[in-house]
Length: 280
Image (cartoon, rainbow, N blue to C red; front, side, top):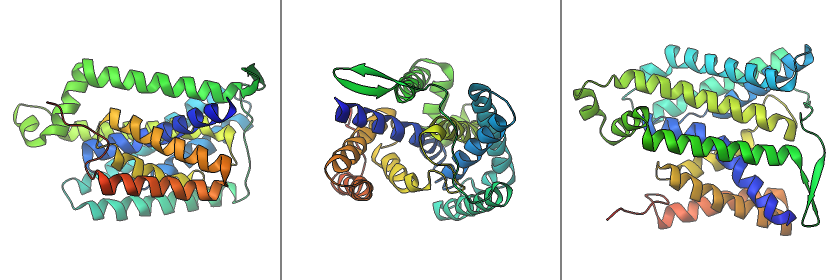
């Protein structure tokens, strides 16, 4: 049961980290290499506010708010000038933003690894295994977020607009949709998702200016495997989470991270369109 829960948790982490990348790449065709830097900003904001007497939940909300505002600033100052440009330009620009943010965090908070206490301590026994309450909370939160996102995309007017812009932006613009505003809100939403990922994962690992940077390559490949569909993202995260858990259990974490990337490369070689199936 322990290995099964570890696999479920790994899938949840990949989903949590990749959702922000997924919405930005899927709708805007922009590779946001500043994604994990946004996560680091969120977790340091959370750390700052908890250090000033705020409880974890208020600090986490503040961290998400700070990252959302930062996303709006970055979109206004840099990203909106890249719409319609080659994807290489977005890679270079967002990578530059990432380097700047990491250096600012290092100057402001230092490079020493620190931590934040989880708000839910202890564990529960299930089928003879002790399961962390906070990890269960993260799994439940991710499941709720994914279900809510699926419902919005499938059933709401906003979801219909997003699907129209993703499918045919010129046509969406022709019927009166403000595609520029949709793109701006999408980037800000992606930054907010990065903030949510950073604040939730903060208590599970050491915090440094390069927080979560080791996840960037694997989550980017996961988004490519998704085929720009939420169902594809779920399948891709399951594949990556299973690979990481199995190789961590019977090998070591370094090999596990390498195997996640290898799994993604193999899948993309066999199915360049991603883990999606054509509708007939």
